[in-house]
Length: 358
Image (cartoon, rainbow, N blue to C red; front, top):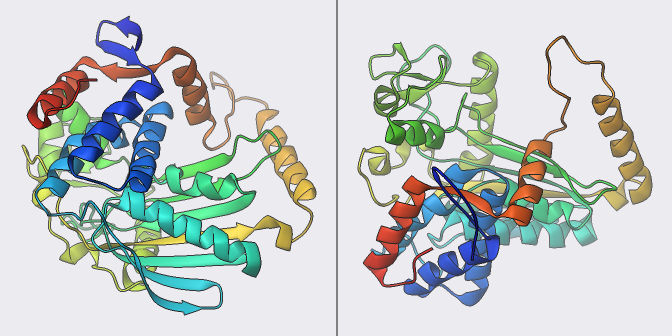
């Protein structure tokens, strides 16, 4: 059901988006339990306002699985187990599915061991990382997740890509039930945001990217041919390096510099098989003290942030993930805003594979 409309597109209910994603997944014969994870991952990204990792990803994901590049029916395999740790092989599955399985495994370990650490190799693009960590927060645990991907970012001072943007995320349970969520990439901006502006023919802000010769650029197309830059200079580079170790070297996955980059080319309609890695960690709060005491302290910390006197001209202080929580509540109430460009792309793809349009 179309909930509302605007000049650039329209609002679509989360349930209708879910039906579209599920129908697309059935085209490649994904298992029903994996379809649930696939739908949750993409629709949750839309609800939280992270449209770069939402339904716009459906066509390249489905095309890659239909072509046999990515396995639509992965069977994860346990390679090693010791104490609170597990190493999984993702069977070349889609990371948005395999990552949730890994976090669920970490949660199960943490329920008996106090902490669960699950590393994954032979996986692919994980979508929005918040999807994985909020699963831990829903079980009153602190969740952490990181993943690697193809090299798109140079080390600080360099001009050629050597690292992925090495995203990582945390989720922390709270009294309100709405977790504190930190989900970010180590680049100044996600590459998907640059792609979005390039598609619109709009410039990018200063400090986002370098062109293919290493010069700062505001041209989105030049940025797509170049590299995104680390956030906070050498600090972002350092965090990205460590995350590459944790999600790449530790599980024995491909490193960023060894992954294919064909999907980066303009006009690419699929993603490559990355054989990438993830690290999912769950901390059982109750093993460290009373859960209610922990939530009270987190609540006091949140309140202290919210009561901070504002700098001149500043907007009200938000805690990590609050902006996305506000967007989620609005989208659940009024429908998810979907641009006309994305609607057109999805309708064309629906016709391509013979399913109902959005």
